Image: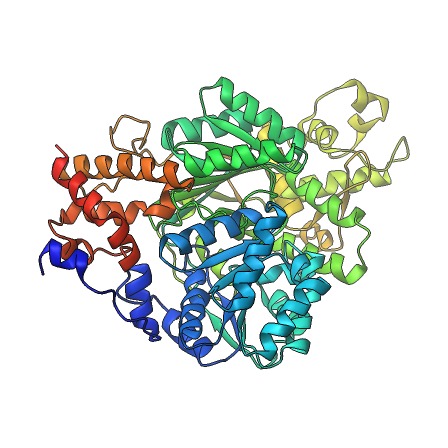
Length: 633
């Protein structure tokens, strides 16, 4: 077919076949993994609980059924989404692909709300995104009742479904009201989706959303393109800067900190070091937060420094790293946050600096929380699993996937696999340290417990004023650890705290033994410890803003001519994105541009064979893309 013929040909009939929809609307030739099975099940009216990793294609699992069921005359799909940013991006991407979608949230004027409601009630709207608190208002429920009575309520999709669980890492009370969907609209299928849920959280989702009859689909949690790396805290700011400058110069990333103050200070400091860093947390003015988020989504090489308030629903595909300057609360949170890197499938990195204070602070937050004993017990167990991951001598990915019940083999792409840590028999050192804490409690002068600094001074035989004040230079343990330096003792103590043999208590973080320490003191439990060191850098050349000269995220396999085409396409895409007020990746992904650059299609028909080019985008942008490709040097 000639270009002229292609441009005037009648559009493909609106098929209800999921495979045809995938090709025509989204431009992909085949589903991935369990997507096809999930889509078929939901199109047929079945309920589903879908666990699929970030970047695994969860959205298609409800968007394709929504289109298929709408074309079959079943009306609108309602998507429950917790964040405004997610709604904006999803609706923008669907409209770009030719699917009529809208959102209802607080950013809209009354006239826009009324217009969207009319579109919904008429049955013309394919997907409507709404927050859980709006969905359960009397006005919204009355509208859904009317749609249901007329057979125009097609499907409910509950995104970020882990938010309904008190055991999950991001519990939101508004999600608890979503059981009304089953009670009030029993015949309307529901699909709940999440990227992270352990056994307790899955059970809670099923119970609270009344998904007892739903099919469970669990995809692999593995994100093989992400390299996991944990370093011991020495000077965390300098360690972070070295990590960014040496390995991710000119690339987009997210840095997570525990407090708002630390976010502000870290972002400001990075900016003085020529890193394009912006802060994001709930304490900032809403307009400032939105401005920073927009810059992160629309510009290249922006590093967002944030609390965990940032990230859920952020679909930016080319985030090349996620760094943690503070320990997350549990593995689900760590997995969810690190999963925001490398959504495009290209290499990405999850880096975390970790020290004794992190362990102490997280344990104290659990102990001092007003929650019940059962909740605290489970949270301690979750923290212990994360500490085991941080202190692991073996493959981190095996441990990470094992937490979610998935068996795997050593990955060859984490710090422990690439540079196996040195370990040593720390049994005697552990016994010395535990014995010293025990002697503090037995000694008649002064307090019965002390902090880490004083403990290490006694072990190393340092005659400080405090040691003399309490007579600890007379203890049998005074000086028995002179063979180890202070950083080594801090490493030993951190690992014993992580293993649960020592706890830090009270306002002054004084140390005490747990019941399990007794067996260690008796020599009944061997203690194998990591040698204190920072894992070596991976040593690759920086991309994007570095010496390679390639555009950020550019595939390494493009030759010089293809690289020129790729950069020309990126420049064209930026112009289109600005005109449409959308992030660039919603127009076309980097992967789609790279395939265009590699293939260099010379006709609309050839361009339509590129993955990610659906019929609407081919019609809207096809000729311009061919012009850009032809003009590229």
